[in-house]
Length: 102
Image (cartoon, rainbow, N blue to C red; front, side, top):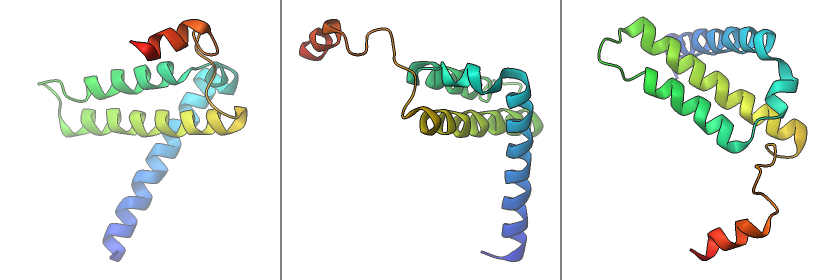
């Protein structure tokens, strides 16, 4: 990786870290710890959807992508803190086995 590419990546990582600091102040880890895998995917999908609107410019696109990256990192952090994402209402339920048979 060239020095220019390395600096570009480091700058992006710093910007993602700023997004993480913002979201941690806003939501905190207690909120994150309660999110299921479904919740995390829904949050990420919501931001990805905003990133593909027709009127999007480079700045707005990058803002959304930093949010996606921050959400993915937060999801992994919460998963590691708790031994996995929060259980979904149908986890460890006989209904779950019925779904697999469909």
